[in-house]
Image 1 (cartoon, rainbow, N blue to C red):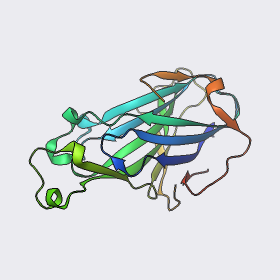
Image 2 (cartoon, rainbow, N blue to C red; image 1 turned 60 degrees about the vertical axis):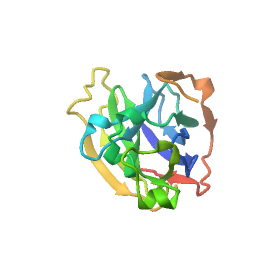
Image 3 (tube, helix red, strand yellow; image 1 turned 180 degrees about the horizontal axis):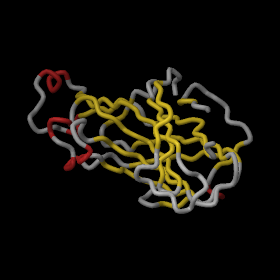
Image 4 (cartoon, helix red, strand yellow; image 1 turned 30 degrees about the horizontal axis):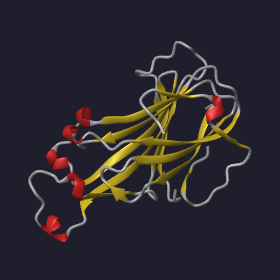
Length: 206
């Protein structure tokens, strides 16, 4: 049985210009005290053709978490435009939020992201070289894709390769300051006895 449940992901800064930081408010529950760290990542998919252009925008390590419900704001800068193929800069892509324990991913939430010019002339005649400063970013916050994986929660020697089994994937119809390798201490998490649904973010419970 999973020891951590993702309760809610609320999308902030949406819609926004391309260079506006991503912001997601993460709510999760630990069913028992964890012996090791949780790791959360924000990943931007640079191209649908290959993972070569995927960018990890930021990652947060949350040190050994006690039993309870918690939330934090997860912020990441926009992707490095030099790593985005010109043909994939405008249009629909994906941003992922992943959560792992002992290097094993146990849940991911994916959102479609549409990057589009506001100016009608640029829409009608898009330049060969993308003008990122003219792009608007729209995250489909009401259409998250949630995927869970079975992992070994108890073994300290778990290997992330080949052990994760996808056990559920579904489209939810519900609306839904960090730096690299930032470690959040327990005192920096907001603990709540009750998570109140406010129709602002994805609510997902097992």
